[in-house]
Length: 445
Image (spheres, rainbow, N blue to C red):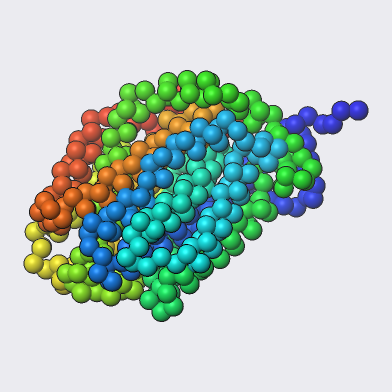
């Protein structure tokens, strides 16, 4: 006798939560997973650069390490293609990848505990940053694909707020904690703390399924859902063809340069901030990470509350334009206030504001990318959008190194003003969709 249909299969033991059955669980899960993603960000984007700068590393060394740390994020579209092509459907479309990626992240961080490179080991720091972030990109693609798969249309703006609010909270806690731990106990202890935090979230992921009837673990009972089997491409050519067709839509071609410019801004600000703080203002490394952590916490709270709400109320286009305008004003102010860069009030305000505006802009742009992503290639297409933004981060990080011989930090802020104005002009000229474009919405259970 044959078993029940895939869509009706029941997976004992009963009682484990299911994402498709609960809006609150979907939003909370995305939040927690992005908190975990923020942990290596706080370590490798804030604590390590501040640690290097405080021990005499110049802009070239910091920019080099940040550039390689960011590089996997610009290449993560490869992860999306692989994830849409190969997946263990009995555990859902994304969950097996998500669990595996987080286990690799933990293993890489534990390896870093024993490697423990010094600030002068620039190549080794770049390599460890690249490897850990490569694992993190797989986790990121799995989360993004999961969000596109299971979120309902009326949840997308709020989900974007939870995603980047959670990431900001994770970065805040990680930047502050790993910065303080590095200063007090050394960088190996910071790697160990980051590994422990991600391991705890991984345990939680092991207890949640995407849809009813799927396996909790590879050896559990359960089977693939019919709706997942229906949209799974299962071959390279359909994935490639659908992705290309979706990417060359006019709105998609408009979104791409805006994402690249957004990423370049983040990379440049992240690279130049610890240099100004430690070498101009005379801050210690733990103070840099503490203020950055505060900024991320504030941005995370605003992302969870105000920024997601604004996206719902005024729309993605207006919210994005507001964030870009705020960036123009901030960078102009920093260029005009060069003599006051040593003032702690000025520098603190800049750090907190720049982090907040970045989170607001990303929360506003993500719903657009979700609406343009076809369900059959959601991981690939959405990841390509995010990869382009992250490619911009590498550009921004290398601009920091370039500025060393071309006008320094003051010139860099002029370049950033031009970048925001260009992104604003492109966005204002575009017709931004407020609903998913020409595709069927994810099924509701």
